[in-house]
Length: 109
Image 1 (tube, rainbow, N blue to C red):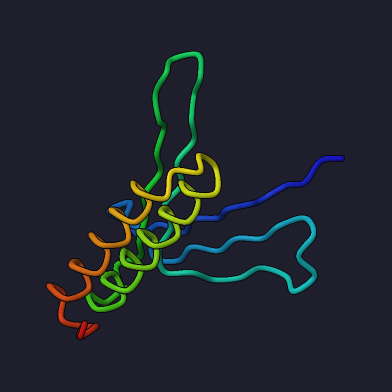
Image 2: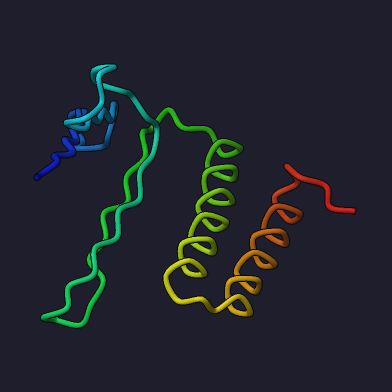
């Protein structure tokens, strides 16, 4: 079985992303629009991570703060689930909390 994920990036005259849409072969809702994306692919042959990071020029700073915080938390969960290393996953979560505090969108108590 194969699945497909399709990304479409609309660029302005300066080649800056204006619109990002995505769709998955098992998504029945049609194309979905998003304001930012981060994709990391592990290339075993070169022992390197290949990355694509894009955001639209209309994305606001507070939205980027939330996006980065949620990405950090998700990376911590993925790391813990794939390695079983709860200690390092907690370190990533703790950094995410500090990030949230510094960006003033979440007040930690």
